[in-house]
Structure formats: structure tokens, C-alpha cells
Length: 247
Image (cartoon, rainbow, N blue to C red; front, side, top):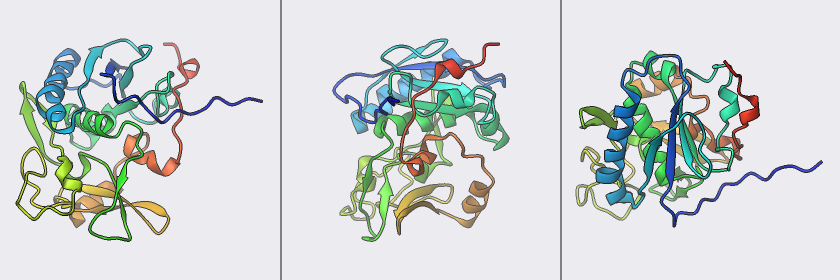
């Protein structure tokens, strides 16, 4: 029996299109068109100039051939949630935003969506890692987790703060350069009180937290299905549109 290969490499020489579509029954708390417009500004004016990761966001009703994807779902227990897996049917990057889970955590869908967006653009295959201040630890290239609790206004919509490339460059002296958009991080690899960092140590993935309060709140969050949790799975699976239930 033949098996279909899982793709984890993406052509960074092309401008990706990201198909954004809503399969959640829970209200987003923001108009989807308005959110997509704000996220496009977020990419064009804030993320791409720093990270070199331009993208075009479009509203669709489902996966679009050749496009990356951002899908809004109620939560990981939604009947067809597993049908979306980790990659699009074409084997391209996919981000999932869990609306009900986000709102239950008293967070904004716009912040969660922009968080997933910037991390997908910076590390589309969820496989980038780097050395850092501790030579026995490998640090995941997650561009929003260390500043997770912070956001800023874009077109009247809150977008996630994100770190700059200098954050992962341990040779910078504290305060010498800008390490995140809101300029709250003052040194490489610093984790703010509301953030965390994914690390690889002693043969396994785990997290370090910016505060005990964050550690406790993180333990109660439903992280299933998030891109940050897919590192430990060691492989990415394509979406299986045939498994989706038809309403």
C-alpha cells in the first residue's frame, strides 16, 4: 500500500496567498472582512518590513488551490476539526484559530488570528530552531509566544505584538536594538510576564514561562490543534477534505 508523502518545505521565493475562511458557529466578535483587512495592513506595514515575509490575504469559503490557509473553527472538538489537520490539501501551511477556545480564555479572536499569522509567516514549516543563551537548550522560532499577552491597534482592530529577528541573536547587548514591535523586550530571549517560549531540552519539547501566573493559566488552556503544539508530533499531515461533514 502506497502512502502519500507529507510536505514540509515551502517556496519562500513566491508571494503566498492565504485563504481565510470561517467554519466556526461561534461569533468571531469582529467582522471577518474587517479582520482580514486589518491583518493585511499588519503584514504589509509591520511584519513584512521586519521579517521579509509578504503575503496576500483573501476571504474564501474553503481551501484554495495553491494557497496557504487560515481557518476559523469553534474548538478542537468541532465535528470536522480533525479534517483540517496541519497542512492544506496541497501540503501548504495552515493556521487554525479556535474561536470558542479563544473567547473562553478572555482573549480576542483578532489577536489570536494575528498571532497565528505572524508565526506561520516566519516559520511556515514549524521546524525552525536556534541556539541561545543556554548551550544545552534549543529554542523554537516562535515569533509571538514570548510577547503573547501584548497587542496593538491596527485599523481599530487589536493585533498581536511580535518579536524581531534580533530577539534570537544572543550577541546583542540589552537595550542596544529593538527586540519586538512594542519595544517591551529589552534583551535577546527575554520572555515577558504574559509570554512563554518553546524549548527542546533533554530530547523533548517543553515550555518556559515569563511568570508563575502565565504557567498556571497555560496549564488550563486547550492547546490542541495549535501550530505551536505540532512540533512535538514530528510530522505534519495534510487536510483531508473528504472527512469534513456536510451541514
